[in-house]
Length: 273
Ligand code: SF4
Image 1: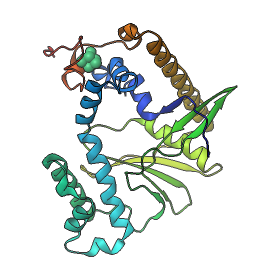
Image 2 (image 1 turned 90 degrees about the vertical axis):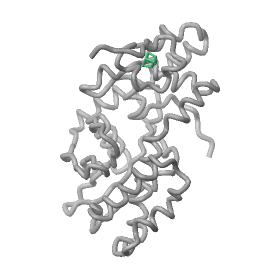
Image 3 (image 1 turned 135 degrees about the vertical axis):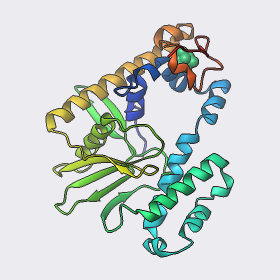
């Protein structure tokens, strides 16, 4: 099927546009510029490739959960952790990735939170881009990309969208709203809630839901972001020397853990806190 190209949006793009509450000082719009407008430049591509440890852990952790539910008998096997590690080929990963994923797999084996649930969908983690959802405002259409980790059905038939987290970062309520908006397209008329579960700390968030008017507001915001992002990319393509004006730098704390600090002319290495 030939798909027409459309401007796109995702939770990750929203996050690059505007920080989560409490994360303002770590935010820098220029990172969006490097990541989205300059990602094919060799130096930028190399830095992006090095910056994928957290992403890699997330993908493999999801793969570990998937393996336990592909073969539920695995949960009862004494060497289950080793077997899952072999399936995930963890021996080929860096030590930091391997150790964190093994600990996640051990955690999950000890506390398999999906066990006994009516699972509707469970991602393997390495499927790549999900099918987009087309959203429309007037004549303007965009693609919404939202990769859902897991959906299970509660006893009262409510769809429960579960997002697996790793690491220390807090969840962002906006992501729950993006999932709930996605569910409203994929499963119209069905009640849905969303929550987050951290596979390393074993903490499960509250359940979140959204009213139709909240979902409408989220959709309007996502369409605005897709439109603005496209305008920014077009402006950059027409005049690359405007990079600093299109994607504004925020030198300071944000530079301390920025993947682009070695090539960014605004980078600062010392920050008074
Ligand atoms: S080094 Fe600092 S100013 Fe440059 S992109 Fe990163 S956070 Fe922004």
